[in-house]
Length: 155
Image (tube, rainbow, N blue to C red; front, top):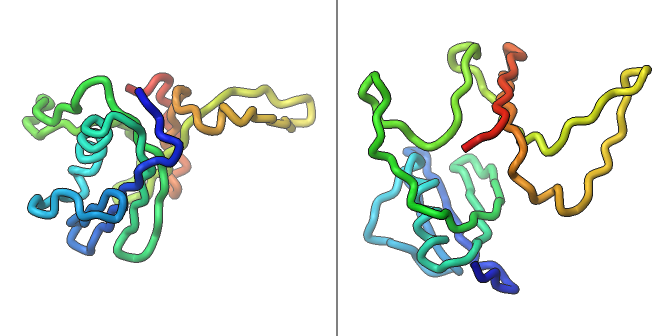
């Protein structure tokens, strides 16, 4: 995989209805297509696989909230054809249970584990390389219920 000196930028705006407007390097991308929020992961996989390099992704929600991340090419296309026993399409991701209905759930990558000292304190010194790493565990945390689900090795 070639990594350009300056990453291409995908800007995605999500409207109130969940529809996406997509540009790549400030040029409209697939303007004749209709994408929804659920299509975002596959869309990013398609873009990165097509250009063969990572991209900077800037997502702006309808309320103005912004998210920025880096998307990298996948080894193979994501599949949304699989179905669970209930017959609903299965989307890529992880699943946690025990949360309250309608509750907001936070998602965090666990980069490393550290042991607290005898006073219950710890100091975490992260190397710069660890800040971009996404190979650790994943934590789903219910913001109201305080329920946490640790997923050791997310797919």
